[in-house]
Length: 300
Image 1: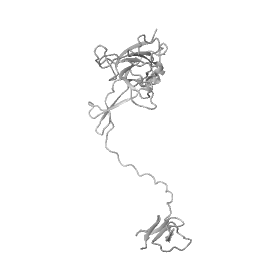
Image 2: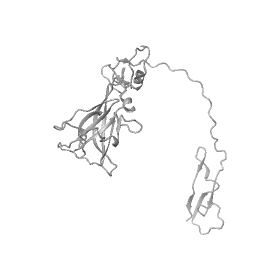
Image 3: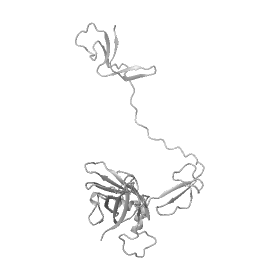
Image 4: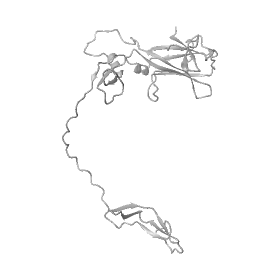
């Protein structure tokens, strides 16, 4: 006895599902939440010829309803250990371009993204790694449908209090994401709200849109009373009180504000920092303390 088998024919040159009889587009597969299934995949090129594979090739299959990378969980993932498991498909043959991939649909990613919806569409992707290379080639990328089920692990139904939700109902409501749309005339709807909109509506996955709801509108209200005075801020930094700050000296030796011996035949006069590098200057309005680097002037 085996799991449910799903037979697919793939053109690896386009990565699409095809009809093996004439190469036309084939219908997408469906996978049910909670099941384990076996994808029986045959590869044919654009001329409907067998596309052989090497016995050393490795594969991985992934499925998700978006292309968000990072911490976002996949709906389905099957590594190479789930490929060509004995007994899954009797017609497995790498030379004839046929492999099997076992997939587990009982995952948190599948449950979270399917939620309470009857079905959702997702992307099914198969990668092939040739021996000796870490760069994959995409053998298949196709749409598939994920479907919900009526019964998973629940017990027999019992009468419930209409005033309360049970655990399954609460879980479904928490997983469902609300959708909003906006309109200026309650007839034509769009997703992003603009200034001319006068109505909005909502729905949950698998449900119908609500009736149009008028957005709040009216004239601008009167200006409110002035608030209380805030607390006084901290005292600012004190300004310059010593207008004679000059932390520099004239010298005939660059970088040496206090030469230890006489300097003769000098051709350049330097003003170089000494005991600091600041000087107070008048800027025609107030004294300003500025930092400086060594400057020079020719004596010739």
